[in-house]
Image (tube, rainbow, N blue to C red; front, side):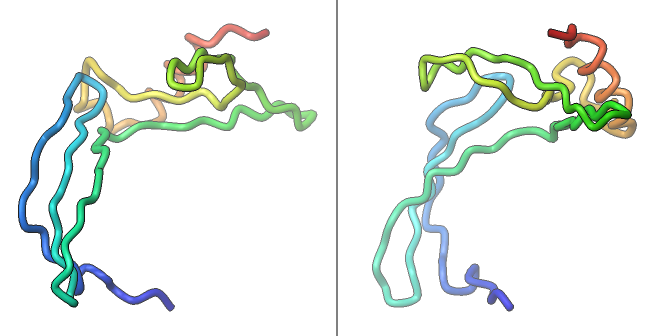
Amino acid sequence: MATDESANIETISTRFVYENRWMRVREDTIRRRDGSTGIYGVVEKSDFVVIVPVEDDGQVHLVEQYRYPVKGRYWELPQGSWEQEPTRWKWPAANCERRLVSTPPR
């Protein structure tokens, strides 16, 4: 069974490095139980959905997305957050439906 390591790490300071409407990146300076220090890079994102659309015959639908950091197009499951109306997360099925409707078949 995994142990709770948070008792062994103390956060000394937090610095927000970057923020946009989809995520926030922070850098935490930490002190370990042995007194050594270090940093953790943390990406904070809002809640999101990932959908696995499966047909009756077992086929799974994917979407093709361009990913700038790796300079390429990749197949992935439909996913996303509800940027405009965060309160809609009370109804995650509505976000799933929105993602599927906005994803044309290929």
